[in-house]
Image 1 (spheres, helix red, strand yellow):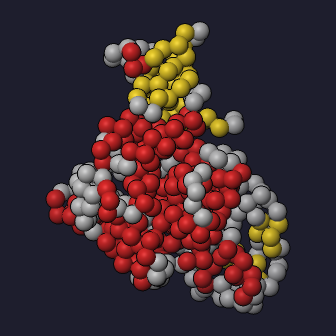
Image 2 (cartoon, rainbow, N blue to C red):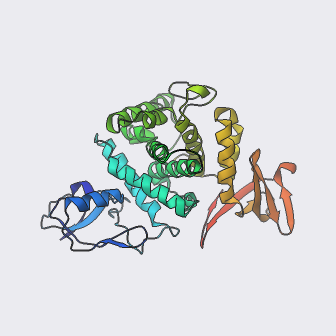
Image 3 (cartoon, helix red, strand yellow):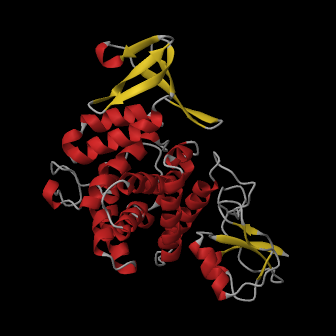
Length: 368
């Protein structure tokens, strides 16, 4: 019989029951191959978390369903495409696996986390706006895992153009990926509560940076990554948590994760919040400029706003147009082309964007 099992439950001597492909569609390991330790390590490096094996044991545990409908995590094949990018879905599944392992009290599966970081970095070199691919996948049921990948993509994209060394870039990416890992130790009834948290619940949530710090220090033994997780809710003006640090005391990795975390949360659909447009996210961050590092904020807006130039929009007047330019000082009021006219929203009171279409290739989706 064939069963899909977690990679951690695969043993040397097992036989693959399905071909395994790379992200580019190249055959990595053929069906029928007898698995050895080298193959297990290679699959971990590829961030593959489940495999289909042939087994005679009817009681052998199968991988937990990923979608709640009895379908286990899939092995990447050439037919699996997600906005033309099969990497994102696989990495969301891998992020889920990391969180599930930590929830069970097990160590962070470092090989899988490193595989995610490596693949995201490689994808950004080939396709600088892979964040757009992720936006087309948003689901409130998968928010925690999509958010981890989203923040990792934003932070990695941002810092690739900086003077960081390769080692430092990997550290930033890992810190962004694991910034919320402390939530794996918080009860689902709080994390997934479909409404506002009460004071007691919010105080519990506010412990997740400390929990994440402890987990990373224990499992990764890495000072900078642990401190980035600890400080990702600190703010420049001292209004953040858990330590109430001000600008000079906040780790530089945490400063971009602060912004990436906020932006990704705003554009995501959550159990208690509808997703909002990237323009709205830029605007909300700009209104809190004193809470974020001003130089990082400006660079972030200038860099990421370019992904949305040309996006079709609908105004509250009913007019339809497209974004021509986004000003870092007034990111919520971009220049809009409507027909042959250019409308500067910052000069017209009471006119604003109500809907925005995100396009990539032949894929498009709406945010409002």
